[in-house]
Image (cartoon, rainbow, N blue to C red; front, side, top):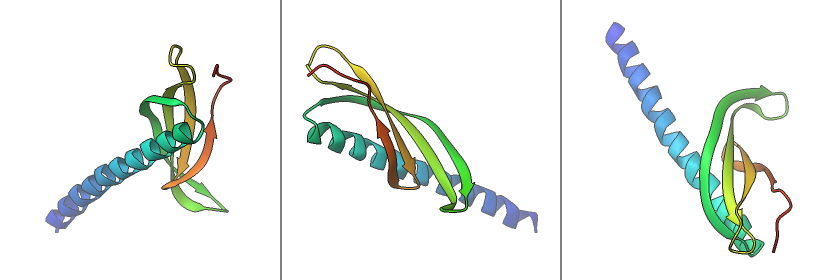
Length: 99
């Protein structure tokens, strides 16, 4: 009976790892799309957190926050923040930047 629990635990761990990779790819695509749309240079992205949340509107979902770097003039770099709710973009904020 305990073997089933081991298999379940390993399966959940593998699913979580694959899901986080998918979330990272979607986050990178969203940041690159934003930079391309605003004529900015995309530099890098990093996930800062992923937490399981519950709300009445969305139910149980993963809330992932990313920090990404971009440049408006090719010399200075700025940090923006991107939030994904599941695999959909929830919020994207950038500081004022030089073009």
